[in-house]
Length: 447
Image (cartoon, rainbow, N blue to C red; front, side, top):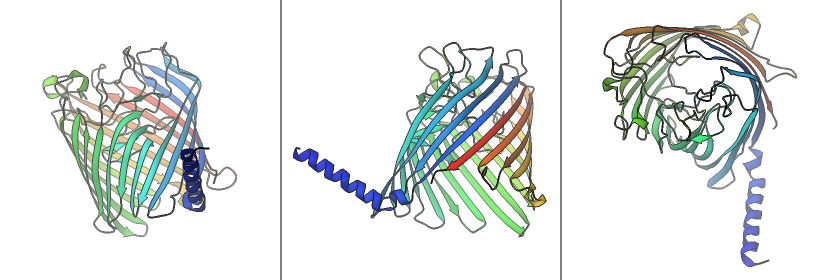
């Protein structure tokens, strides 16, 4: 054995011994979870697509602790498998993205697909850096989507620091994404045909008092947009059984780089001033939630400025070398109006929304919850660069969840959801839809 191999072997042995004797393994967690989904979607327009499909997804998660020492090292890993049980889009089309599974060259769903991901992590004091391809941000400027079978993931690095007790700082850069119904990694887009090289962000959450949190974030999706977010969260405890929560959100977005001049980086969500896909938008919302016992009622209002729709990360328009969808569709946005079918972010849209929740634990049925959401958007500007026409749309969602709280089936949950969406917009922009989803979830902790 030569000296270099001997040195490498000793180094690996030392690292293994450090990991084994420290909290790297002692602080680790592992779990297996499954999600079975039945999805029924009915687009009612003349060019509508119907979808009836069932699929099962399996997810393995491993989260390590940190090695001992001033600087701790760790590793998180994730394995995902999706299996199509039956159904798909009708009629089959290779030019239409499937919202549940990847599709084959003829538009039929693939039998199964899988992916592996991992994040290396480093911790110094109360500052943590994660780098890898299993990142799932949940931030005002980027929310990873997990509304179908498998979750969306991002590749890059995220730094989180809590060195100051009342402030959490977050910064990062991402360069690739993989969609909820895809097995392909792609650049990050805002609805254009090309992915950006980088999505960069920085922000802070300041807990000014025990009841008040102030937020500031700035994000840049290269060649698409720059976006500033300001948020205020206040929780007023009226009594042990009553509270009033205030949630104020403001987004200011502007063009970046090639946006507005290169057709590959255009952003269009209905009307766009000049028709060139240039980002220029302000969006604000105010929501107030009153809770009493098991009851919770949220009422709010949201306004999108006239010059163009609110931009956000959505890879649904990305295509492969033959012009077919990459399957990267599916996006979430940090707004109360981001509900089952629509998110009410079109140019000029003036929305009012309400949300009622009830927790049946007070009636002796813990784990059972019901929810109803309604949103109506008005004053939506026309499509393209048209200056005439104002339209409206509405959506009503119903949801019933039950999770078993104890016994051998603890970790099993069922969620039934139904949505009805109606719009006055031309069918080239949006279509009336009805949608039903049934989820059966199970999670088991291995250790």
